[in-house]
Image (cartoon, rainbow, N blue to C red; front, top):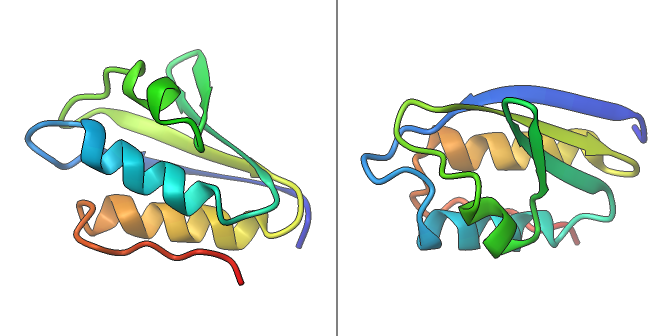
Length: 96
């Protein structure tokens, strides 16, 4: 599917989105051809940019929205959602 996909996720980790989770998100997002954004409130950032992600200041319990548009958007959102669900415990899926 090449449409637009969105899903809400929750930041579980005690330290929120610090360098390691942001790095995993950016690595995962970089493996897809679609445009992936993460929203906190009315602010949207590029999911493949570590510094943009860190600037969200997303602490524990923060709700974010994953948005992807373009080829592979379903798979991209699913993969990123799994990262959040696993509390960033090693799940990084890159597109082939």
